[in-house]
Image (cartoon, rainbow, N blue to C red; front, side):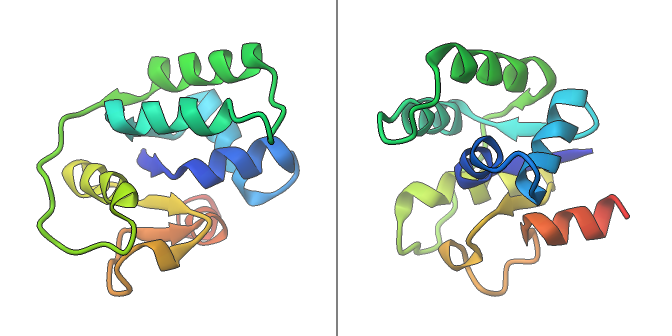
Length: 130
């Protein structure tokens, strides 16, 4: 199954190994969930996960991103012509719509309220992995 994984899910998974984001990351690493991404998403992952405040070892970040690229699908989505409070979040919805895949996030407020593809981590697990 395909899914778009918001950066905050990766951060949460690395911070809290027992929560829903970590379960989703485990499904990605097993190849059960294949992340859809584009170059902008990979750049954001790399930038955020390497921020000094998180103190994630660079080898861990590099290994994780290599795994995502190995099991995931790199796409070139069409731009969306809808307003976003934070334009940097738009790329995730563009990829989700292009792939017809759920967008898994820790904060639904970053996306349009009526967007059916946007799911919290717990909702994604409940809907697809009961």
